[in-house]
Length: 339
Ligand code: SAM
Ligand code: SF4
Image 1 (cartoon, rainbow, N blue to C red):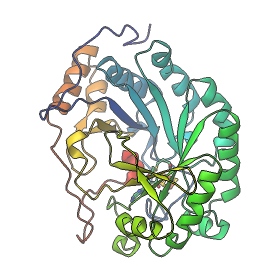
Image 2: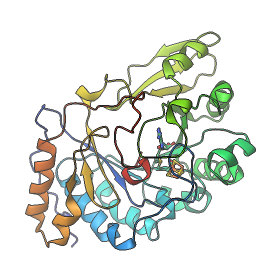
Image 3: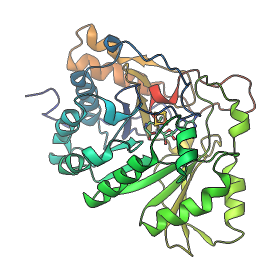
């Protein structure tokens, strides 16, 4: 029996502000087959393998969270589908879906390897995935991802749909690059029966470009869309920074993720684990608990649970982003933390 298969009810994870943590995002690798300009430097130095959690360690930490009431797990990265043995991890974690302890096992992917893995993901009980796509123009895609092939992502999306997965598109809004294309992209996604969520760029990690040059306010985008579409607010709340509308003309759902606004911290239900086992209880703060050190010191299950509870107790009230600052608010990259 693997640890935590016997999920005895334990008191849930409640932080010092009374928020219950039910959602864990797990970065399974810092590596990626793309180099999106807003996410990574062109020549990234990736972590030595020994620093990255093994698949067993990832399973153990994720399962400890499930035993503490986590209902949703999102696997991310880097690019989760480039991690060797990834499907084994997904199949192992799916035992918590089968037992009813977990409501959802999902992932965020750039889609390049989805054509290969979509059937296996669906077979393991994954129902929904997020695919990141900022443009449908092959040349712009190649430039934004520094060499990526758009046709692979489109084939991946088609394969996911064919496997019965529901796909949500994530699009980072970039002032100079895709601002004008956004309505077309939204109409395409909705025509394909896919939800689409727009994301504001966040000041995470050092990259070459000046981020304030790329920043496009979603309030502005929304205003422009409303000049020709009717956007009806939806009550849907995920406990995260996304707000949703229905576009009357397309019938599709559109999300806005505005991490720079402070309006969602009160309901925050999520924490993140980096691929090196560092638990961050707030995306916009430097707070960190090294769970890898706990595991590698030979911690018992009870000690691991105690370390997790200790970190959650200290979850900060809110974040501290400010795009106008010269330095990123947080020095770690999105690819290490997971999006
Ligand atoms: N490789 C996968 C992907 O691209 O979907 C998963 C990891 S990626 C870091 C997760 C999400 O973060 C993607 O949708 C990506 O567009 C977004 N992202 C990366 N850097 C960002 C930044 N600086 N600001 C806002 N979103 C960012
Ligand atoms: Fe890779 Fe995703 Fe970052 Fe793009 S956004 S470089 S696909 S991790």
